Length: 132
Image 1 (cartoon, one colour):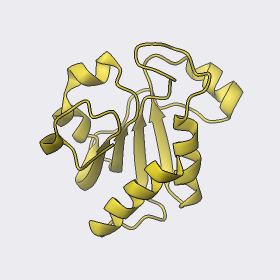
Image 2 (cartoon, helix red, strand yellow):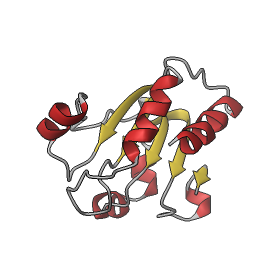
Image 3 (cartoon, rainbow, N blue to C red):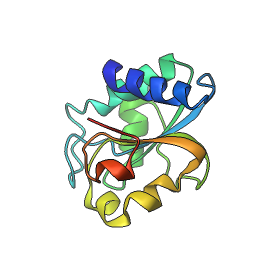
Image 4 (cartoon, rainbow, N blue to C red):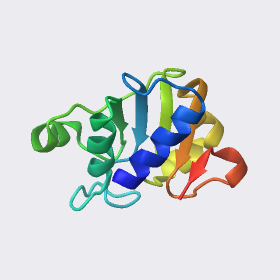
């Protein structure tokens, strides 16, 4: 989590995005793609690290029961992310929903100058700003 968050923060700083108070959308929370299982998910570590930087983090995952997340982890999921609202967009879980939407649709959640971090290398290197 710390490594992913630091790489995103560095990329945002290079684009002169003010980190404290920035908005980041994380796409996917589950342990693996196309599965509602939250046990052992490391995405929670990324969320915690980004919050330590003062970043406002929204999490979207169509496979997760939002009430379970609220009860177990104490935060609300975003059901429909706002287009054009985020300084960073992180594709954390390679759900088919996200693959099928395509990189352009996912990037549309970002502001004009944002960072798209494809953690799972779902899309080609030319379609994202960062990849693992």
